Length: 262
Image (tube, rainbow, N blue to C red):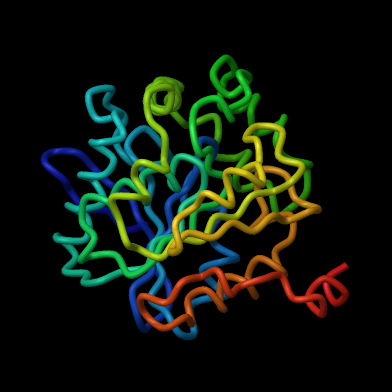
């Protein structure tokens, strides 16, 4: 277990591999732990970090730090303290929201963002996310199998207030406004069977700026990286391999991937 102090509060993280820095940010349910298979897939070419946001896992639980702006400050302090330079960010749910906000605040520090299961605005969120405890949400969103056990293991450790405060923020924020303030390349991934977050409509996808592209996983729910891991990892590697500043709109789910992983 690795940890640093930010202010006087503990922030837990783990790191794997060598190469260019890559930061993984977990979602509304769980902790850094469910990123382990994806970190292993990137560890040959990247130095992959995964950390617990305020209120989750082994990071400090303090209500004053749960606002999304404070989570953004956490990422900035973490990078500065570890001396990490320009990064790629991969975030899921809450982590996707924080990643996009961080890229808008610090565009020179972020090369690209992969945002998974991320609502474009608050109207796309199932109200059950707002009304259920984290452990109950894990049971709702995931089948029981060894791949999903890490989410379920850490879900009950999350402070429900951290989830509620982040969801309240989304009721007053739309992410097209944030995209339009940023030129950072962004790939949106959504599971087409996600019960928690509605997929973008065709109209919403057509209105996305040139540096933003959305791809749906037809056999996934809220956790595409666990439910269609081979397909997810191949797409992630292609996205990370794009030339800096290159639009992800050229990326698609290749037919041979679909045949191979079914």
